[in-house]
Length: 306
Image (cartoon, rainbow, N blue to C red):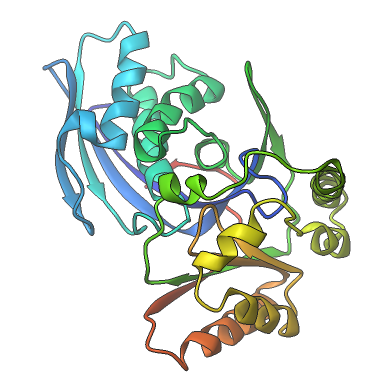
């Protein structure tokens, strides 16, 4: 295999109650990448469309993730990567993760799959570290594994793939402002009370149980964030109004996607998810703020060939 074109899904990290440990992949929103094998060792970023991002390998998340993989491989070849961005950086739906995950998945395929999906997460996390100064896995893990993933542990890294209820759909609205993950982390508190922790752990356990049982009401009751949302929501225009509109339209629950500014809602069924999209859009239509809305099922495969 000398060339591979892949779809790299957008992802929603945290999923309200799972800060840095829970994420899900979207089926219809994502980037495309073309990776070619070359005789020259190393990684070269040949083209980026859709966004202005650095072509220098060491400054590009795909390049850094790819180099991390090659550094652990016995490959005597190199790779050229063309990136067609359809996820805006700073949107909160895993733009850097899509590039990082797509690069390592494609390279691994072209080398004959010497690395496991868990090892690929390790490599892709290096791209996340470049983007946000923190090597978190709650975007790259679902991008690589597909569906919902739980990061049970970072040391050692332990990723658990969770089931996806068949009728679960996501609605994501992205106000066209940029919030860098590195900046949004600076405003977070470094400690929480025991009372807050108990609420959060209960919701995380409830959400995971809801996924296994396909209990949509339990999923909805568990989509509460007592740790991050109270702070980060202040950076997102009309967050509370959007959340109320989505819940009124039938959403199971609403939260901040990753570090924001995107807001996600989960719904039972595509029809309700579309109603939620219309309600969320209606809030921003009365403002001067540009925005995008996505309705998507959950991507069960993660990165995949096109």
